[in-house]
Image (cartoon, rainbow, N blue to C red; front, side, top):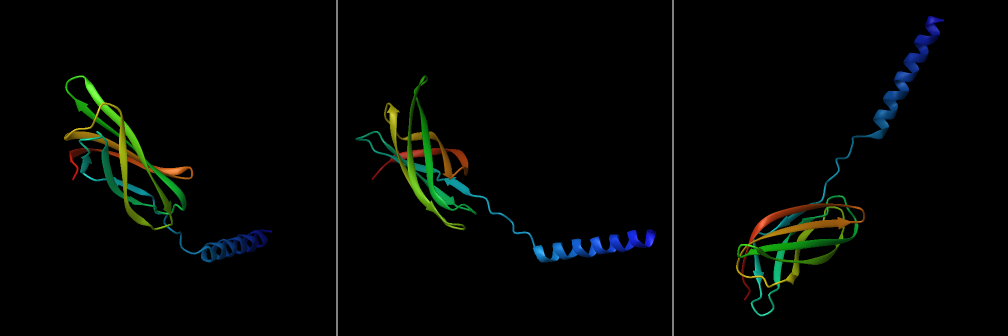
Length: 139
């Protein structure tokens, strides 16, 4: 009886090894990436701002959206805030640049520091980031 169990154990070990060999090496997944440039621009006539950056699709594929919010403190109590977006089509491994025009919902953007947040979404996956940027007059 113990010889039969021993043969079954050897057979199971051989089958397990065959499954591992046939599966091949595991493929590392590449995560998406998103960056915001350190500088942005504002239009003195409209009060709108432009924020730019880079993206990497990683393993994502399909239509995507980069949503951007921008806040800038003006004085001691007021904040100019707004949002914009950039469309893109992702393919695995693709990288590129993006820009978004930010239309303020309150006030007008001016030269100086501001905080930008961006979120890349493709399907139900994505990534986000935020950073302090410096706005300068466009043109």
